[in-house]
Length: 309
Image (tube, rainbow, N blue to C red):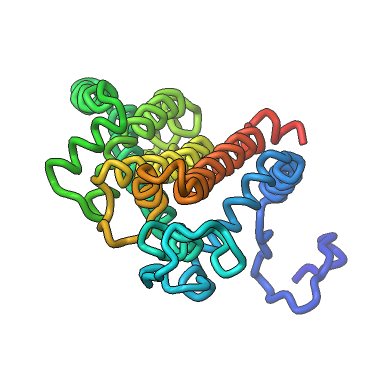
């Protein structure tokens, strides 16, 4: 039997004979991940957006435990201006506006995230099927997507809520359907190019099933634009929820939300400006933070930019 010295192999301490050690991860993938993290840290707008959105997400998570007052507790101090006891003042019922804003953060974030996730799942599925199979399947799916595209988002969401009724679940579904076409068009365009790549053709040549090709070869290679689109969709979902609630078609009227605060403050703009200003600023900065983070994430995930390091 040849020895280690005769074969030129370097013995490894503790290695079992006949077992080949495999690297834990591809060095190229680790290098790409490191370059991505460095680029993301250099994107100031992404960091600003991430910090602000992360702060609001934390508020949404621990809101009920840090709210200074009961958001539904009435006080005799109606329309009180901002003070030490009520930093954002009180509304027309004497309820602490800061507490209602904190509780409303959870509702608005929940609607935005769930609507974006639902739209992503439905849009990715439709886009994959349309782009991969083409022909009559593509025609049917894209005509449906074009029908959704023809209606303004708010009009479509208002119509769905008016038909199926208000409430948290119906609002999430209505907003998700309104933004489903954005994901479907994005994914279809990516699939049309990725299905002709060499690795896709090779997988098809060795007999891989269509489902495996779509889920294991095509979908992972278009994760970057989907992730970026999700960040934008969350912000748009929050904005749409606030609009629906402002119009009286949102979640339960007894639930504190930013849109409801705007609706309640429109009759007191001159004498109690804080009821409308603070919820409006929360919506503006939240959507702005998500858009900044999405822009920075898109730049950091750019294949050419990441490759340049």
